[in-house]
Length: 338
Ligand SMILES: Cc1cc2nc3c(=O)[nH]c(=O)nc-3n(C[C@H](O)[C@H](O)[C@H](O)COP(=O)(O)OP(=O)(O)OC[C@H]3O[C@@H](n4cnc5c(N)ncnc54)[C@H](O)[C@@H]3O)c2cc1C
Image (tube, rainbow, N blue to C red; front, side, top):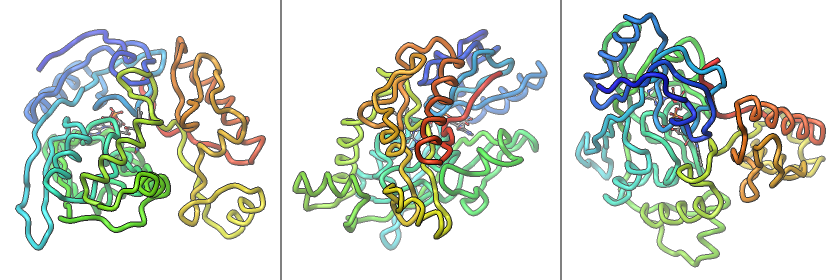
């Protein structure tokens, strides 16, 4: 177990902002988890679990605590194929994209649309990662976790995770911060998929004359779409989608959106990227943060010096969209530190 001191959060998160954390510990095996929590307890410090830091923004005041960086690896078959269904496991420090690649190579479907979503498998249930019409709630069976309250490893089944759009017990409610997810099990089905696919995926398939819909083909298509419009976190500082989409719940809300000429997808979703773009913000730079020219929902850190710059840009965008359309955008990535 490697313990490092005074590490800038900006160096372990993809938005590349944030002050120093007192300690950072790389977790390479399940046994390290208990030891790391004991270390934090001995020093009277809080713990924060991190994967690739692609959905976390560090604040300027830093974190007076211990960050556990998840590097527990291993992917394989949990339960052999039966009646066309298989269960795969991945230890939580594996990249989600590597689990997707493994599953599609075997010919199983269920997570192929999550190809190239940055980050670890362990973070996927935290905000119920989703893309191109799929989310992890559709395939996840259970997770193994370290429960810091009971100080033991426990299994949590899908039913108890309360997964919905960008939501779970791991990011909302009184259990936030209680569990370190160490292993994830997904259940997948053998065979090809049936069109029609999610809007932009369907468009790509038609434009490219794709006629065969194996999980690997869909994976390739999703990767190509993403590569063309989303920044590679290795090269460009961002947290992907910066705002959640807006969900409408009543007929009145739907009628209002329609009257204003705002697109509503899947019976109730307003793409926040559309709102930002049509508020005239596409490509705009504010306080060193750029609204991406390719995907308006993405904020890129071009030259922001601090979290304060990001916060100022965020408020300007929210205000601009609220003034033009009356909707209040909500930030997607979580924040760490003071
Ligand atoms: C370019 C780009 C594109 C993106 N596209 C998408 C997209 O299409 N769909 C989507 O849903 N998201 C997207 N995201 C957001 C991000 O990829 C996901 O939220 C991903 O799950 C984050 O993984 P991570 O390992 O980086 O988690 P981190 O950012 O490190 O952590 C995220 C949260 O999960 C918690 N956490 C992480 N690991 C564990 C664990 N083992 N146990 C308990 N809690 C844990 C953390 O405490 C934190 O609260 C994108 C991000 C970027 C930069």
